Length: 111
Image 1 (cartoon, rainbow, N blue to C red):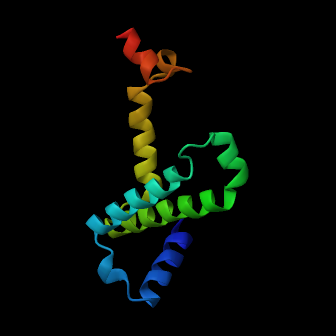
Image 2 (image 1 turned 90 degrees about the horizontal axis):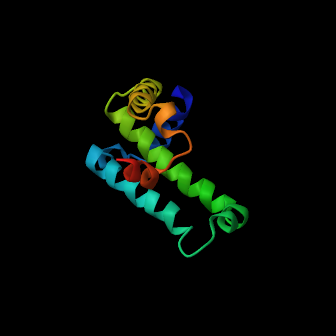
């Protein structure tokens, strides 16, 4: 993970773009790139998009990940640590015996 963050930072620094990459603008960029990823699926069957737009999917997903990693780096977050903490929290929030193969509407109907 550290190697990819270093490569991203090198790309950014060689272009003197660090000045534009504050947390607000990175958060906006994550959202905008996620919207571009989502747009690939608009009015399409997901299976068709996965089969016919793999390169675009990879590019948009890479953009989301790049901006996310840049933001984590700006905030001095250890990516593995924050993901592992969130997985632990999610495991407590969604115990397997209560949520296995259930979606949100299934859970809402139960409550």
